[in-house]
Length: 286
Image (cartoon, rainbow, N blue to C red):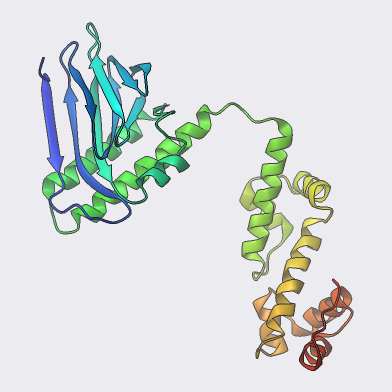
């Protein structure tokens, strides 16, 4: 049977880069409306807006309902059928690109895990609507704008998948917190930062984060930050920057204070360290 209602818009100028939208649409299906079995040469995602239906992929059947999204991968044999009593309505977008599989993989979506659930259907529907509207208007730049909405959809799917995952054990959660802190310090070391600021930014209590950090690294967050700064300073001192410029580059506004900290850490003043490196391949122990 045909759709009760069907509307679609196509991208007049789909790109050939990392990700390109081909088309988008929405439909209210008739009871037992069937698509497939078929194999596509592009990616296709549907989000169920209402009703129910069945999706078959990789020899597995999925019973789907409102809030579910199902993904079709190139080369995969798929079939999907609307329910006899509650036929589904859905929105869809077709896309392709060199990084399409990569984006989906980051969202936890694969041929073996092609279905995802969301409790934010209104948000997803709004993005689908804007994407389809962009293609309908076909204004200059619509290809890039549609691609932007698709990336926002991927972001929503990623968050939905994370909420689906089984809660991690306490040890894994703590490890994740420490890894977040390490990444933050590694990226922000050149700023005049504080541990209070880091804890606030990451959403953790300062005392708890500091305790967990030391248990996992053997250093307090401040000791770890100092180590990053000093090791970076040692590299910069091998170049043409002045002591003041090196100090500023590793988060010290006061060159004299930097020099004191460097000597305490390394056993040599910045000038002595630079001289020794120029005379012979010598490195101090931190």
